[in-house]
Amino acid sequence: MLALDIHETFDFEDDVSKTGERLKAAILSRGSGDVAKELYRRFQGRDPSVGAICDFYDPPAFYHLEKEEVVQG
Image 1 (cartoon, helix red, strand yellow):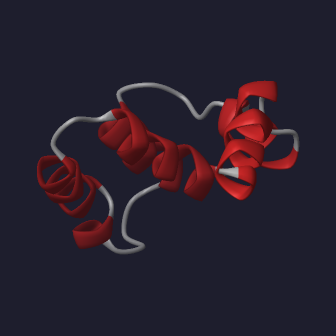
Image 2 (tube, helix red, strand yellow):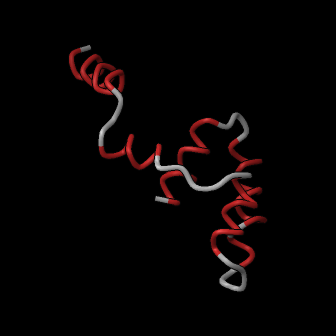
């Protein structure tokens, strides 16, 4: 769930490099020395969301329309 939530962050942020650096500083460089929940909050500025995993298993209707257009177009 956390990985999908973080992945979705990259989809919505304008500066992917800056987001990657923030991820590296807040989570990846810290290792397992800190509590995962605190590292996640440090990166996202919030608690985890189930929205990304829900979208992964049940994509919004517009996602299906875009895929059909690509296949037919």
